[in-house]
Image (cartoon, rainbow, N blue to C red; front, side, top):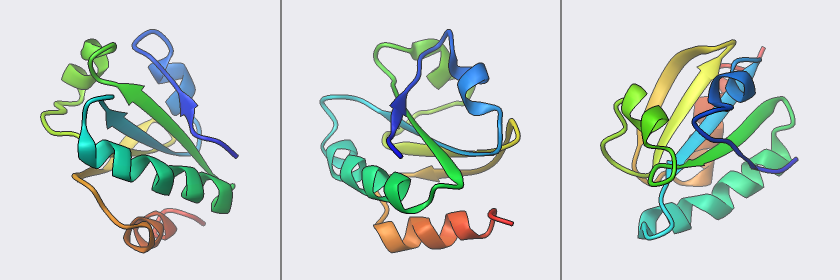
Length: 104
């Protein structure tokens, strides 16, 4: 799989089905650049999870709606409901363990 981009207009439609991880990022953010390849790897390894990314500078409405104040912020949704918010850079194994809690 791949990490897909979403935006203010499509966010709810894109992220309301199943287990979804949304990476709130900015192009100028150093830790975001470190988190991105980990998200790519996880999307390849965890086919039961949908992965999205959203640029906070281009999509301020969604960032504000979810009170994203620091980036990277990962929002984990299950069937449209936010079940977890992860702020800052996190290593792959830590994220994989976290997501495993929500996989049936």
